[in-house]
Structure formats: structure tokens, C-alpha cells
Image 1 (cartoon, rainbow, N blue to C red):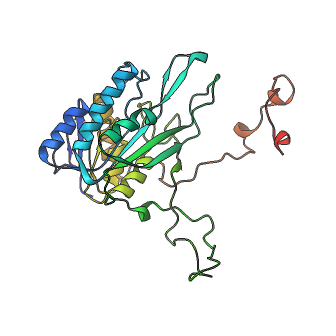
Image 2: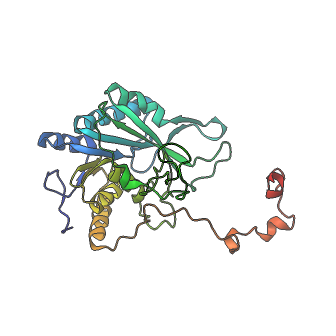
Image 3: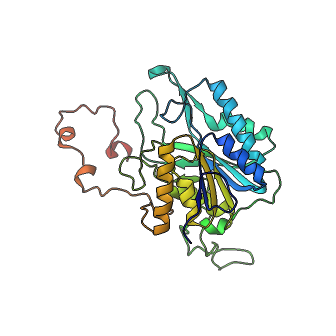
Length: 318
């Protein structure tokens, strides 16, 4: 692609719009042009007190999300999709903690605008804060909505993954003896195992909760076509912009943090130059070599100086 056209205010001619300000202002700009999004994908603040959000009551948070969702629906094309990626809102601390799954809290809002849920995609990852009074959270949810019509964009062939048993053959019927799978690969299902962007992840920036680019690529490739518009109302450091530009889609996003948008712009430019380091979309999750030091049991745990009563080992299971 040619040098990316990056604008601060929305233009149909721009490859990338990085708008500093409220997401409703950007969505209103887009609405005034008459343009429509084929995909709106975002991860809104979870109202847990991160540096980029102002924590409010759960009721106020839900009302703010309603305004955002309504503005998104107003610029969604008739064949378009909305993918809302959320985790949990947590109240309290210690044993008083209570989790509110935001996908269940927000689902009625989307339904109130006449949208239809196509999938509840589970994004599973292996790293995060370890809990002591409940199980450690290792997944978040992507709600995929479209208009009720069956005429929505879905390009499954663009995201198929290798067959587990490509040599499997049909055993009966008119296709008996022929390969039973699709030569392009299988449907990746609604559970995606993609590492989250933490610590030494190749894509890590200063943002505490950024999207892995591969996650967005899955949605961009399957739910849009070239030159379609992708909108991210909370674009942060621009993972959605990079994924969109990589696959020749237009993108518009907003954020209130100027520093995040500077990083987003630089990442798009690096993507254009071919210097941006990213994790490949379908790269398998790494399993450590059990013979390495970091994957071995520490000597302190083997000589009895540490108490591990109650922990299951392989002998306990098998």
C-alpha cells in the first residue's frame, strides 16, 4: 500500500483517522459524512479504575455504554458487525469481591437496538494476575452482533485453520471414501487461544490493556472486505488501526489520551515500513521446554523446605 493517509478528523478519503477526544464526537463526525462501518470492534473501559478511565457506579457505566452503543448502531452498515470485547467489573476486595460479567450486563442493551447475537466468542489467554480467594481469570468475551437480516458479511475462508485430521474420509453416503474436511481448513470455533499483551510480548507498549493485533485480524478478515471502514471507539495504541491497514481496510478510532494516539500513529507507520514487530495471527501457543531451568521444579520445592501439601502432582492424577 502507499503511504498511509492519517487524519485527526474523519474523512472518507483517509486510510486512518486517529481522533483525540470523546468517542461520541468521532461517531457523530462519521455519521455526518454519510459513511458507514462494516465492522465496529472495541474493548471499552471496564470501570475498574485504570489510568485511562474515570471510575463510576455500575449504573452510570452502563448508561455511558448505552450512549456509545447507540451511536455505533447509527453508523453501522446494513451488512455490518459489532464486536464488543469485555471482561469483568469487580466490586469489593478480598473475600468481598463480586464479579459482574460485562457481556451479560451489556447484552440487553444491544438487544434493545434490535441487534442479533451471532456468537459469544471466548478469548482465552494464559497470563494475568493470580487470585487468592477465587479462580484466576484467564478469559474475556467478544459479543458479535449484526442486524437481524441474514445478509451480513462473513468470510469464513479467510480465517480457516489447519484440519486436525486432514486425512479423515467420509464413511457413508454419496461422498463415501472422499476427504470429509474442507481443503482450506476448518472453522476455528468460538474459543480463541491468543496470548494477551503482557510483559515480554513482542507487541507491548505503555498501554496496560492493549489488543493483540492477531485477535483483531481474525475479525477484520472475516467480517469486512477491502476498503471497508472499521471503527474502534476506544482505539488506545492502535492495534485495530494496524490490523485494518495491514489488510487494506480503512479505520477510524478515538481516544482521550494523546500519548496513546502518538503511539498508534507510529505503529501504523512502522507497519507500512514493514518494521513493526507483531505476533503472527495463527501462531500456536508456546509450550515451554520442560528441560529448561525456568520450567523445572526449583530445588527448594524438592528438598522439603517448602510445604506443598494439597497440591496435585502427576502421580495423584494418573
